[in-house]
Figure 1 (cartoon, one colour):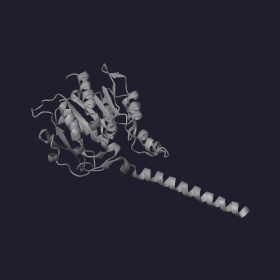
Figure 2 (cartoon, one colour; figure 1 turned 180 degrees about the horizontal axis):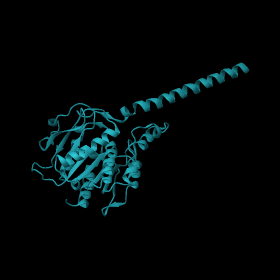
Figure 3 (cartoon, one colour; figure 1 turned 90 degrees about the vertical axis):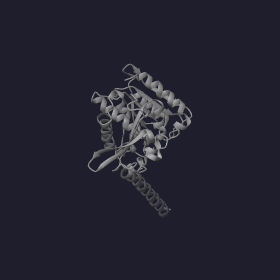
Figure 4 (spheres, helix red, strand yellow; figure 1 turned 30 degrees about the vertical axis):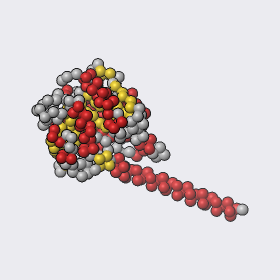
Length: 297
């Protein structure tokens, strides 16, 4: 009996050691490969001719952000008439694909009489380098400066718009500009999170992701000090960035800025990647109302 008991104890310890090794291996994988899990770029160069619906109003633009690192992007006007728009929307996209996947967004902002500017992050759409939060954030400031110094827009004409991961980028940019006392005219966040750690915790609840993540995007902390009007849009059926995280981010923001109350738009039937397919008219209406609140420059 004693021998059999000892044998079971040994087997039990082996299973404990095995399970512990697997868990530690998962932690190591998350620590070492997290950027490959977070960023899913389509690195192929983008041809403007493929963006059929907007190509006649759009020009390729390049931006040198570091030695040997050049970003590729588009500046798209809402009208062929020079300087017809009084607004520019800088688009910060999600973590997958490249700018060619965002043509529908350009089309929608054209309907709202807004010019648009979008650069692919490092490693996306022909842009050089590899993506990382610190570099993307630094690059976003250079994109802002490019819009003002090269394209001739004023800060009061520029709206920052971020979708999913891009919401973290846009929020940080608006926060940094607010510290400089030159905030954008407005901030539009779609299907984004309170922090990347919060979003990761939903998908990996058994892992200590908050301790392991290098890329954090703590948007809820930063949005408290963003000094521009805010519009948040989120699909109720979102399974990638749950609806509750969008609410949490919204609740952390100031109730109003410049006399304009913050606005949250719930899309009951929309998920994460289908917003412009399921609720395009609702989104268009929400953005039009937001721009009307901002008034003319």
